[in-house]
Image 1 (cartoon, rainbow, N blue to C red):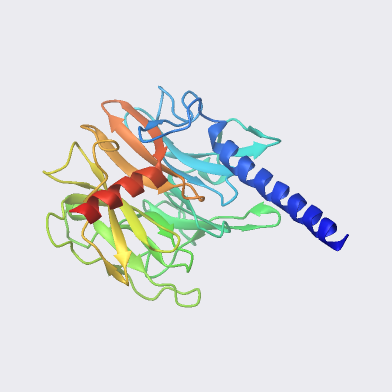
Image 2: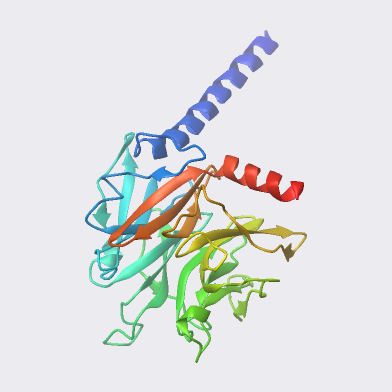
Length: 312
């Protein structure tokens, strides 16, 4: 009798777990007619990705029940952050995020724990009456929802540019930045180590062994820091900008690998993120007066890439 009762409890728990997994899967597929395979397809066509704007830089809550993305006009200006929520199995319509209504904002990133949202904005810094340009901000999430924007202070506030801050599980931050006096094409990827909730220094990631490219940035770091995806412009690439990946092996970063022609085209392919369950890669593809968010089966793509790397 005990065994039957134990089995019944186990089957109930398994059913609940399976249901949760299916809900996670369906929460994203609700927004698109096609579940992506190894061929990228437009994500949320007509809802998130539209003909009237340039969309990109999408991020999801850990439960994949809330999302934020950047939307610009066709000239690539007037950046604003929009948000959607999954309510009773249906996604709400895209709405301008409260913190993005008054000031320009872009590049939202939710941390792996889901309690912090990073973004950049032109809102005035503390004790300032006017905007001094883009600076990096974050918002904390509590039981009542998202709080008020807080500026990232030193050492971040002193940088010329910081964008696309992405956090690992341990709170280390990776982002695009530029040294004083350097040309915009020389921007690169920087990081800051979390020291019990404080950040003391900013370091540039070591230059690659060869062909480091220009306009390198917009990193996405895996929660466990096992890989990083970013975009760069290189003569060996497929187009205006390509997406590359580097792997962390025993604390050392490998050389970069192009994600290949399934992802990269003659247009600009950039600003990648990966869904919290690790299944899908999202990125922005932009050309002349167009820009949409695409997604692809990242598990299969990464497997094919690693198989190709290991065979060479």
